[in-house]
Length: 138
Length: 161
Image 1: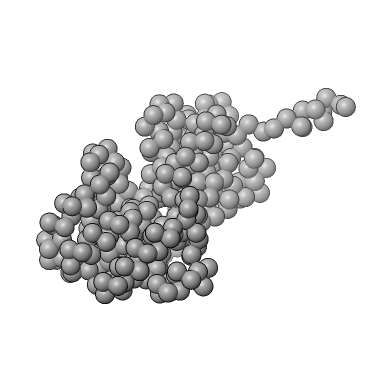
Image 2 (image 1 turned 60 degrees about the vertical axis):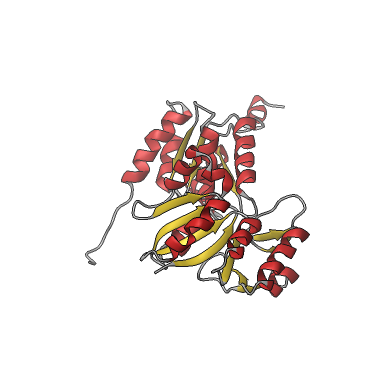
């Protein structure tokens, strides 16, 4: 077996969880994959059938199991955000970015010189600044 | 206005409530009735941060809420009352004045059977819903305003699943 094929067999290290309403997470990660080929660094999580306690348990399990300390969610009032905030209460080295968009995730994945939480904070600013309004409509 | 929606939703305050119902109904306040949340300041702050600044949230235990229902019903703003389970809503129904209850979300858990995409019930919970209806309350399931309300009979037979 060549060293090249050995390297390609190594699993990609997950850097963050993406969670939110409906297929928000899978959709965003799909878009990230199409643009960058780095979608496998993100863990998309859907929570359709779950109550609050189970959402928290699922997110906590994946964070600890995958040694991930960054969560991106869609909506400040969303259940995934609420659950994540409960998790962060006992996890000082983790960060939650609520209201994440595609530019946020793209910036995060290319901020390679930083720790994942640092990259997430940087990406949040980029994502916020990436919203633009065009056209003259009142 | 008054309390325009009495909703059972185990996720309590979340996107469907704040945005899905909150915006079209021009909701000015939410009454969250939950014994656990009412006892924990940190949990209350968590839920407050999930709503826009123009929307107020009031927290009560089940017993305490009964004493304040009249005040919220006479509030000039439109409001939503939320409970996380059927039993708490039933206590409020017993205090009179509730004619319709919205089942907005009861999610998967041990012993529950799926009845709708967003409603899972144990046999005991099904009985509790029937008892609510038996008290003259119109019980329907509807997660968001744009969805068709599902009657209690259709909910319990799972025919809309």
